[in-house]
Image (cartoon, rainbow, N blue to C red; front, side, top):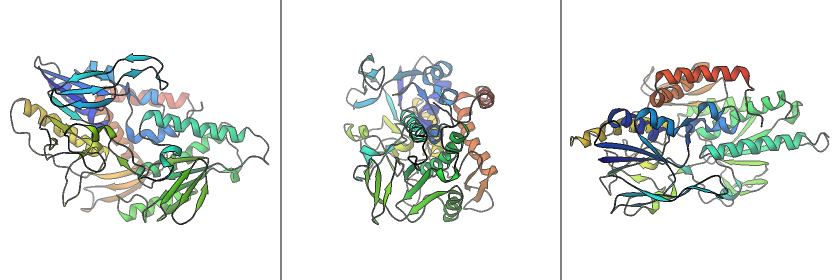
Length: 435
């Protein structure tokens, strides 16, 4: 039996496992396994909403075990710790009951593979900034988003519970990194503040507004998008009373302050790091697998590792050439396209047929700026470079991307059921999580 092991249950890995399970999972000569360190999947572009408390993870998460049962693949829980290429085994660490690691639920083990697909996504890149890793909160996974949400909630409650206006003060948040994650989080946090006021968790006085500073080292925010998108987004954030600082990189992060190269010192209650990504460190330790300077697996046009034809990589952890010397960007749409390609290519490989080559198509990018608005560029409309869209229409298109992801991995019927459930939940619960 040919065993295909997919490590990583993000947008690309889960979609690939689902597609392969549906197509070949019931065959007697092929076995599809998905490995992930968590038990559930939440679409990573939604983590900023989790951090602001506006997304209920219990409604939006997908349980890997249930997904495997419904779509003909197997699920194994555990974090990848290494690889034995000579024996074709993926090494997994133990699974514990909680972060305290008091009780071991599943021991460390090895899983045999014939074809291995690495889809481990990415983690935060601190660029060696002093104190950043120790004192800044990140948004790499659901656990970190929940940790940030609770910290923001507790910071507001602790400050407001003082009662005396003389000792209350404005809460200050610093978001380092002006990419999509930083921009979306900044806008969502302003919505969180409004809801906190409604439920008595934050002062109703207008001058007690949470100070949010978005710091970008480059000359403008959203550097991967056209300049007109960046300018329009800056204007929207300014209307939300969010300070946008560009061209002044952060050089030091301390528990209660952030320093920049220009000598600015910002007093903060919470610092959030959203400035860059790199592939997980474990990839740099894999025996004989070529990676680049940010740990991405270097792959060919077929998404095969240049070091081993039995190893493939997709999504944020893959270094894949696109055009004009550029690399495929770390976006959800790239992971989706690569999963679609590998679903066909691996089935062709099983039949000893040519796999073809992956071709990336940029369909544009959208950035959420609060619950009712978004902004970005949609490719293929009006001009070759795409058309600028913003406001409710852009927000509708942004929401459609998530619905498309759900329909791909869960099917149309379950997606519709999920949408109805979410709508009913919205009517019977606060807009944000309050505990």
